[in-house]
Amino acid sequence: MEEAPERYQRGVQELADALRELRVRSGLTGTQVAERTGASQPRISRIETGSTVPTVDMVETLCRVYSASSERTAQLVELATALHRRIESRKVLMRGGAWNRQQQIARAQREAKSLRIYQPVMVTGLLQAPDYARQIYGMSLEGEALAKSLRALHDRQKTVLSSRHLSITVVLSEAALRWRLADDQAMLDQLRHLRTLLRRPRLRLGIVPFATRVSEIPLHGFEIYDERLVTVGTETQVLTLTGSDVQHYEGLFAAMERAADFAGADTLIESIAAEFSSQPRDQ
Image 1 (tube, rainbow, N blue to C red):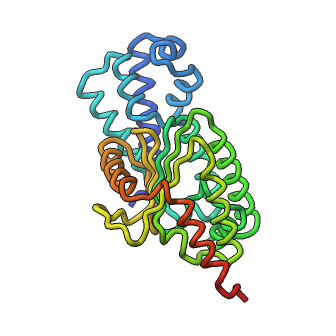
Image 2 (image 1 turned 90 degrees about the vertical axis):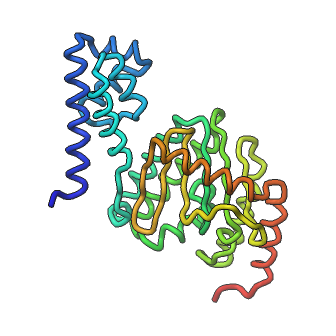
Image 3 (image 1 turned 60 degrees about the vertical axis):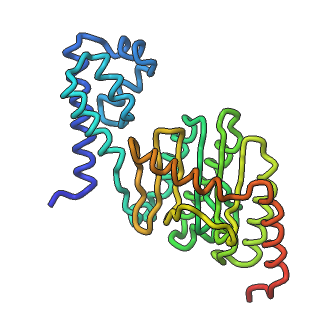
């Protein structure tokens, strides 16, 4: 049986070859295509070599520019959708791939105008304090792989949180703040870090309290980039979803956003921090 990475690469090349063939048949140059699509010429070149997987919207745009048949357009849109549903093994990510994953996420965030994050079990990476992040990543990584991933996370946080065009909404469950995923001091530092982040103008942080009744039960964390892409973390995989799946997760996020307490987030975080402070410290 063909391995998943090989199937994925074969699909990427198939899409690249098909789009290049359509361009050649249309008689257009890469520069002309760039002008008509609003993309850069280097991006068109990367799409045709398979080094960049175009979004579904870009595939539709290119097919329209190339006057492709509706049947051929549907085939390539389906292929692009399947590629963006790629499944990345968590084992691969944690054996040196976590750094690459951080870079992929950072690229998507640089292009987005809005970012919505839901996380039920821990503080999302974008808002993690240094020692908390070190202990979380240290559960699976060590040595240079750990150091490289933490540097990538720090760079991602700096870039995204300082962005002037990105609107960020984060919803955490109360459990995400209480689970002892790090030692007490790291947990306290993390809670204080969240209170500091609450002052950022383009960041909204809401907490779903234990006592709040909810209308949906998302079983895993996810991030929504604009209305076009969702990344979903499961126990063993990271999924990248597009198309109708985005609408599904938008509905889930809306339900969690309604249940979250934004105005009282600071008070709740402060009370949880006080509980950690009053507990006996880890030995």
